Image 1 (cartoon, each protein chain N blue to C red):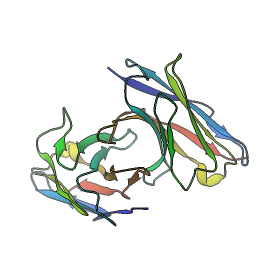
Image 2 (image 1 turned 90 degrees about the vertical axis):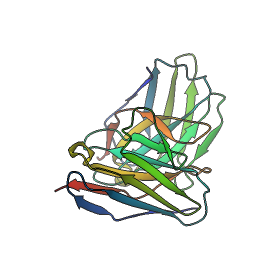
Image 3 (image 1 turned 30 degrees about the horizontal axis):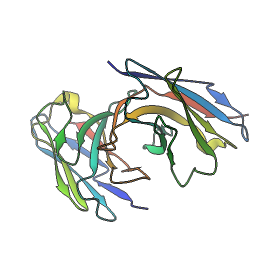
Image 4 (image 1 turned 180 degrees about the vertical axis):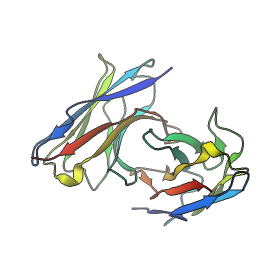
Length: 107
Length: 119
């Protein structure tokens, strides 16, 4: 099965910073990748699907890129409400697999 | 607006069967999406359990396949999860979610229900 590895496992950044989170697939998955944001005590929210498509209602400071095995989630200007854990998910075929998560903390 | 709500026992004894229902409101379960279960052990990451289409077609996580059954009840607009022979390792927050057939992404999610496996 294809494994998904995120880096870093945690990151701390200041308001206004540009933040990048990486997700690597153990095999190529074209653009079949989704990104989620999960705040403490809440269910995950879909941010990005198809590697680069912004889900309706998601702020434009979030963007996704990549294809094949290497993907990135970028927050262009970090806001206090972006403090959360972020997960990638392979979406090319069953079984579906999530990355281990990246915890984003605001300094 | 589609909403999903998980329900079921919060405590299950080891070796017994975990049973949960996900009730879908604001959307017909027969309207062309998969419906999935995802779990999250306390303080840990997300694990996909399995998904079902309204015609009953299922896909399961290979690591759980021998113990998992997902079924759908179109007349009551809900779908269900059964996990047999549970152990403490099955203690988790169990979420249900709608899964796009075209992108295989999950949106929206239910808030989740915590199931603890303990005697």
